[in-house]
Length: 297
Image 1 (spheres, one colour):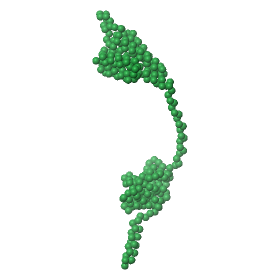
Image 2 (cartoon, rainbow, N blue to C red):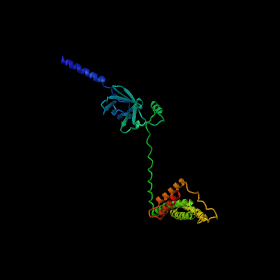
Image 3 (cartoon, rainbow, N blue to C red):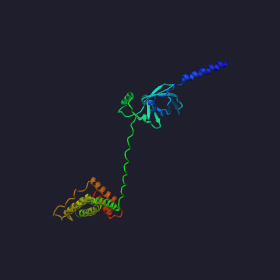
Image 4 (tube, helix red, strand yellow):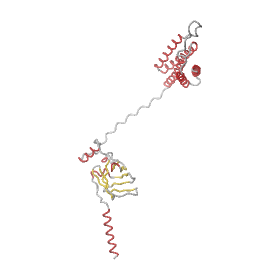
């Protein structure tokens, strides 16, 4: 009696396992190579698609084993829960289903057969599959010739460094000349002539430095300012005329406005910062700033 029961139980269990096991069939060779391999699914599980049609699942507690087949760029995956159609992306690196809600990313290199030729749109790719057009990528073009390395930039010579230094110092002197010239325009008589002389000296030195640097444009600007200053100086008397002879000339523009004072002081400060410590020019600039501060009170 017990032997008959065991035999019946064994037969029933065998039939149940056969009925519950998915049927495996090798996918068509025309598309199988596009999908065979390991994939990482959205849920984190690892899926392995084997050549014999098995879809193995691992690395996740909820894994369900299944089977797969393909047609063109569409993979059909079936397990005990249901069936899903995955569409392979043109680059062959991933496939998705349900409008991208679930994605599987290829683990490893993409086979050439999985990379679709770009025929202009997804619709054209589908048409190509239906018509049997080969979308396997063409052979890669020959690599472009390696460009010859560019020669290293030559290091600046001592003469180059001297020119750069002369240009920097020329700009500092030019700024000092402009500061003195602006103070002179707000002064009169002897004070104006003194400031004009300071401005002229700075522009002369500035022109010399620009000449050393080979900067003809700024050298010409400095010389133009020298001519302008000399013309103003020639029209400026040493002192006010005696009482009753002629009216005292007004200071050009009168007392500078608050905005003019701020602008002039900023120009002088820039020149002070540019001048080196111990440079006599720095002391001149400090004196000019003091005069400007007195004038702007």
